[in-house]
Structures are given as structure tokens and as C-alpha cells.
Length: 126
Image (tube, rainbow, N blue to C red; front, side):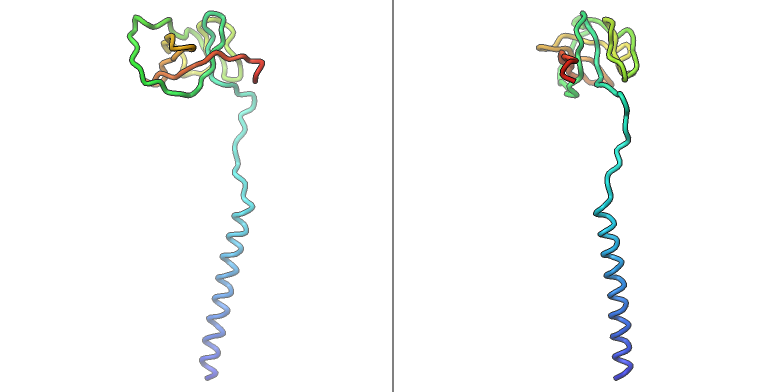
């Protein structure tokens, strides 16, 4: 009988220790905050065409545009922490030499094989 009590007592201690470990693990996980690295002064990807600033919407437009419809290509790129100030200029390395064309009220820019929609941006809103 004493042997059974000893075994039950050991099992209860093991169960208690396992429960404590699980509770500590769960409690520790509840206080964990997701760390998001800061990117100071990073602006939205933008292009300047005909003295108008266009910013990306991030939307992919499923269209085929013939080269004859291109309005031009991005001729220079500034740092992403700056807005373009000259026509034909962008602020994202992927925009270098990218063709662009008129699309509805904005422009589409060919980036990595996909046409991305850019819309007129009023920088006072940002």
C-alpha cells in the first residue's frame, strides 16, 4: 500500500511540474510583442510624369499593353526616402527603365513582369 501511495505521489508531482511548465510557457507567450523593424523616413513608391506625382496602389492590373502604347520609361531613380521631383523619375530601384502607360485615371508601370496601378497622389495628404 505504501508503495502505491509513493507511486501516486510521484505521478502527482510529475503532473504538477508538467502543468507548471505549460503554464509558464503559455504565460510567457502572451506577453510577446511582434517586433517590426522600423524603416525611418521611407515613403511610398512613386513616379513623376508630366509634373504630376503618382503613387502605387499596389494593385496588379491584368492587361496586355503593346509597346506602341507606352508613354515612356522611368529614366532615373532617387532614394525611397525621397519623392521624385523630375519627370520620368521614380523612387524605387525596381522602377529603373520600367515602361509606363496610361490606364483609366492613372498610370500602370511594368514591374517584375506585372502592370502595377499608380494613381495621382496629393503629398499634403501624407
